[in-house]
Length: 382
Ligand code: HMG
Ligand code: MG
Image 1 (cartoon, rainbow, N blue to C red):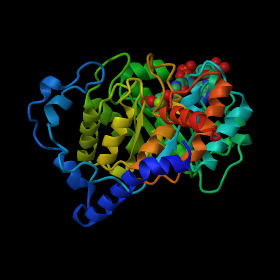
Image 2: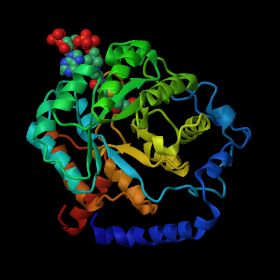
Image 3: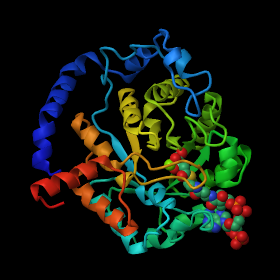
Image 4: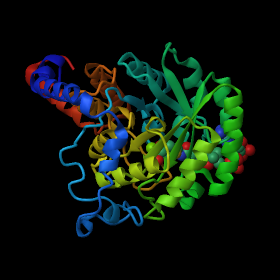
């Protein structure tokens, strides 16, 4: 969809949203007041709450109440949200077709040209475990870097950190799950061993002046263990913060979370004293709830949303995991809600479609599909 068409269909909504938000500025000064409103006692929705692998033990049904948000929807929306792009890493790590180096570089550069300012470009993990990213060194060294962009990469240990550092990375991300079984399957470590390893990684990275981001996977459910108690989430989250990560990305690794559960987990973390500026959300869209989950996270004031171009994504060691929420879809929703992202939505479909063509398959992004349909109907260039 080109700018003209989008403006016609969305402009009124966006203007109304902006006017409404600026009008209420004086009355809604802090996020915490919005959060406290969601602490309203339960009002009998337990029976309606979903159960299954996504449900947090002792959680949603007993904590959140019906009508929590009535009259307060989106009062705490931030003005600006950082979209943290994981397409070149999470997006490609599970693809059967291995994207060649030139296509990876074009993807990253296209995303940055469109306005992405935080991007995970690869993983310095064992290439036997993630063959699709075996060219991590080439990607990181051949990339044309742009001033003002944070380029990051996953590292699982000191060896990965060392490679990342030699490749000129100044930000890395460490990752572990709130589930012991997933840690064993994904990084071949117990939770305690993972902490030992990451303590060394963080010490060394911080000594070298690098920023470290921390992922907590399986926050909302685990493919092996099912329900994940909040205590496990908090144990990993607190441990990573203690190691010095500047941000926690809360992973719905297998896409089982629902909006109410997201609100519940976020409120629990805020109640533990985690600052909103330290929280990012990372939703896989396996069951179609990712955008709704993003909307709820924004309502609670979260300012960083992970997403992946085209809706690529998945973890080979989390059976059933499929794509991340699509960057195009997130930017469309955020900008339409009056939340600035700094990203030019019009530039994303071409980058997304080029990656799709190199991978030889259609990508899940709904926005890009709509854009292609619009171009076909109107004869506009994609
Ligand atoms: P291991 O086999 O236990 O490692 O794997 P090891 O220490 O015993 O070493 C075995 C071999 O691997 C040795 O080589 C090492 O040198 C080599 P050999 O002597 O046999 O020739 N090795 C390495 N090579 C290159 N780079 C390295 C490296 N480390 C060791 N960094 C390890 C342990 C952690 C390395 C392995 O399990 C691994 O690479 N796992 C990565 C799994 C992964 O990347 N999963 C996907 C990312 S997580 C995710 O997607 C979730 C997320 O998106 C959030 C969410 O959605 O929730 C982040
Ligand atoms: Mg992921």
